[in-house]
Image: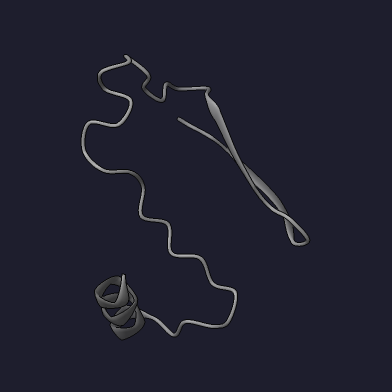
Length: 57
C-alpha cells in the first residue's frame, strides 16, 4: 500500500480524506460470472461523508 500512495502522490496532490480506488485483484467475479454491464449502477457510501453512484456505459 505505501508504494501505491507514493506513486499516486507523484501524479497528483493527495489531500486528507482522498480515496485511491484500486479495483479488485484478477479473477474476482469472473468465476461467478458477475460482470458489470451497461446500465449497471455502482454505488459506494462512506459513513458520515455521503454516497456516490455511477452508471456503467
